[in-house]
Image 1 (cartoon, one colour):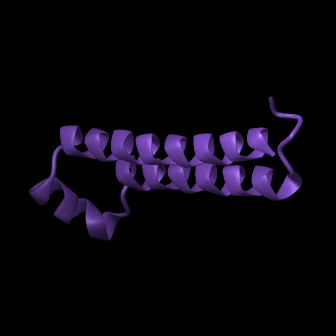
Image 2: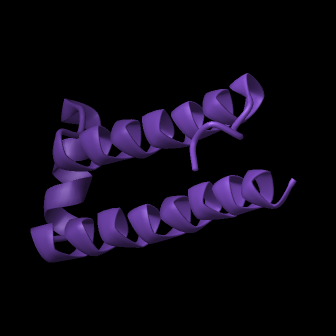
Length: 72
């Protein structure tokens, strides 16, 4: 399954995964400036919903890349 994926596609998948992990990190550990706003405007449930939404979007993008390479 993964033998047909080119280096460029692996780089795309790695960038998507890295971006996702960075967004999770920033959501769970905001900097001090944004921390006050985050406490006032959101709660942990909203943060988790954002993370799950991002994960869902990223998984679909990765799946599309893998399927596209599998068909070639």
